[in-house]
Structure formats: structure tokens, C-alpha cells
Amino acid sequence: RAGRWIANLEDLVRYIESYSHESIRLSLLMTDFEVLHPSAQQQLVENVDILIGVTGAAVAWLAYQPKGAVTLDLFPPNSAFCNEGWGRNTVSHYGGLARHAGIEHTCIEQPFEPQSERL
Image 1 (tube, rainbow, N blue to C red):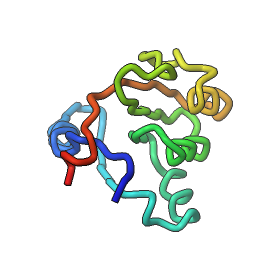
Image 2: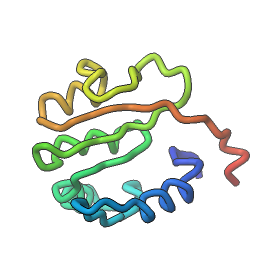
Image 3: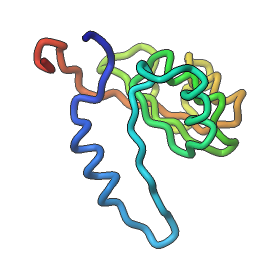
Image 4: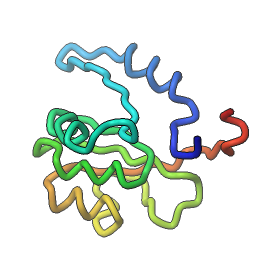
């Protein structure tokens, strides 16, 4: 199946699960929005303080995050649409939407892994 994914997802999960700070409690939920009904997607995002996703239509759900939430938008290398840094993409696809929704947004470029290597 073609699509977007995080090539080093296992590393990311290990990092998040091992993160510790005295004033922060993290709960991790991973899901593939492609298999969820749109109403279930909306209900999930309405309760998410930190949204991490590969850039694409599902990132638009950031508009339903609680005010003050954050979104990390993952881009392939050499993207013309990602200026890394919080609040530096105020007119990009999802940066502009985040600005209007009161959500903090940033993007980062991540290495690309061809689909054939994933299978």
C-alpha cells in the first residue's frame, strides 16, 4: 500500500516513551487516520495536545486541536514548503491554518525512504 509514513517510527516511539520530566505527563497514541472514519479522526484530534504527522491532508485536523496545542509537521528533504522553526511557516499549507486556529506549528525535514525499501 502506498502512502506516507515515518521511516524511523520505532525510534520515535522509544524516545517519547523514555522522555521524563517532573511536570509533564505524556500518553502516546499512534493511529493511521486512513483507516478511521472522519468523525473518529475529529474526536481524537479534539483531545490531542501534541500532533505529529507526515505532511498531508491528515495534518489539517490540527484545526480541531485544543487552543495552545502544538503540531509537528514532517516533510521530506529539500521541501520548498518547510522553514524549520516554531511559527516560521505562517503562510504555508498547515502553518497558516495553525495560525488561524491558535495552534503552535513547526515543520522539520526528515530523510526520505523509497517505498520499495519499506516493503
